Length: 394
Image 1 (spheres, rainbow, N blue to C red):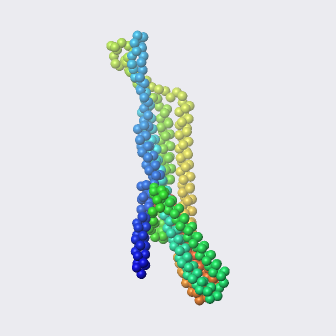
Image 2: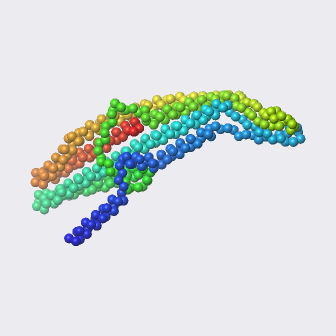
Image 3: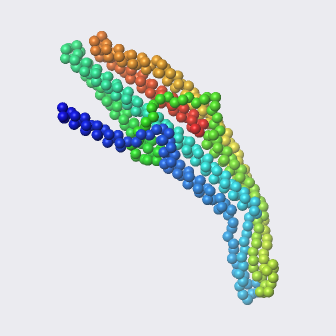
């Protein structure tokens, strides 16, 4: 008796210590943690910082030239020469760089939207595998009872040893499936930890119940908030800004300098140099303008392609949602109830000997098929909703 009490206390303490090593995580907490710790988000922040810092660099004022000349032929005199682009060019380049920074911000929104989607899928997969494991454990428990009854019937000569061997083989099959599911759980947990920015951390436990999510309003499937739409818009604005910047290259540049070409008594105004540069080699600038114009057309076509792709994905997601919704309704309203009845009736029928071991195993396999079918339908149903949330950027 004392040994049993000691064993129970030891198991309780060990269980508390093991559980203390794990961290429960809701789906919302997982999304928040991934948003803060995922390296792709940090990379996006660095890209935004880089493009913001390039705004002033886009002004690109050429360096002054320091000159030494001997206008009188007997001494060198210093001078300075500075060239400037036409002022509108600086404005256009600054505006184009600003659009590039806005594009980087839109790309970060795309990274966050995709990250939320991946975290939801990984979390949903862990919930699914956890319930599948429970289903196999329940099946294993039923087979354990089945084996006990089989042993009794074998001892009294009601069945042959081959029947006992078949029952044992079925039990080993369930044990194998359990090990496979646990291996998949570990891989799924590693995938989730990678998304959270904690690679290799297997201490996370999903705490949300595995249940059907609320169906979104089909009549309100506006995808204008999708970052891909925003990226297309910002990319078009960037192409237009670059085109305007290249067009401003037709404007003449300005030249200003200082050099004393005469004696020391020469007035300052006669020491100055003024002039302008002429874009004489027009073919080079014309090529850049045409290229920028083509970039606008490409950006416009990319918008059309993006809209086409998003609408196609949304239609597929809605079709999948309807399909898995019907499957889920069947299992919830009919299938699961039938599985429970089959389990009870088969167990009792085999106990009293009205059915043989083969029919009993067939009934158990049918119950397992129904339960696993329900869990798979629930997983796919939730995944369809996650896809709609991805497309709506929710």
